[in-house]
Each structure stands twice: as structure tokens, then as C-alpha cells.
Length: 147
Image 1 (cartoon, rainbow, N blue to C red):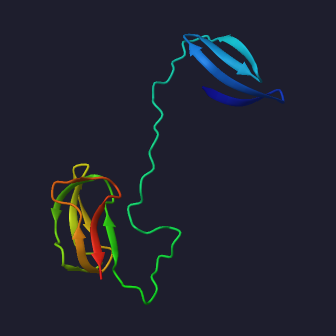
Image 2 (cartoon, rainbow, N blue to C red):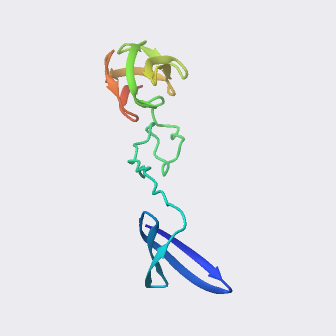
Image 3 (cartoon, rainbow, N blue to C red):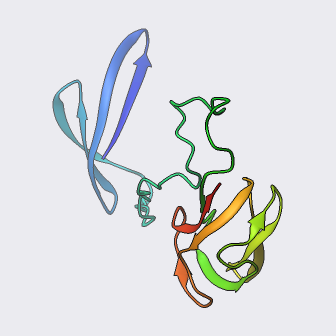
């Protein structure tokens, strides 16, 4: 359950609390089990331990790759992904539109707030992967931008 390392009068002790039942606790001190009576009623915590799943990155940039492109590479090519889970309220562009960095692409409602998803690339909208009213998760593909 819980582990503690204690030093009493210069001597090290490893204490494991195995179980707690009312005012009696079963503890293990340096490998030896003891039944310990406590003066007051101990309350066990009922808070669950939260375990978060691994979230896919919200951008298409891989940390191990360089963040700049070579001079010969086409500019503005890539994808725009959802920065957080929510519902698509409005799509402000259509396929074939030319966008610049900072142009508003999509309005996303998340936690009862409207969030603008802006372009971080320049180029032509190749495809829009969502429709108005769709629910999206963090990292879901929203828009493809090409040269």
C-alpha cells in the first residue's frame, strides 16, 4: 500500500503499510510483519489514482526532425490538427482557398468556449477532413494544406 523509509536513533527502517482495518494496521518493518493498534480511527482514502493515456501530438511536427525545411522543399505543405477535444462549430475556408499564416480556418467549441483554429502554414487548402457538428479529439486531422 504505502512504503516509508525511516531512521530512528540512527538505524534505518523500511516500513510497508500492508493493510488498515479500523484502528488496526498490518505493517512490515524490514521484512517482519506486525499488527499495530492505533489510538484513533484511521480513514482510508477513497480517491482513485488517475491514469492518463498517451495523447497524440497536436501538430504534425516530430521533435526528432528539424523544424525548418530545405530551400528546395515546397512551402506550406502539411496538416492542421485539433489542439483539443471539442465540436466543430464553423468552417471558415473551403477546398481550393489560399491561406496565410494566422488565417482563421475553423471555430471549435471546447468546454463551452469557442476556440479559433488558425493556420500555421501558407498554401492552398487541399482537403477539409471534418464537417460542421463533428466531434473531434485532440490530435485529430482537420485540414490538409498543400502548395
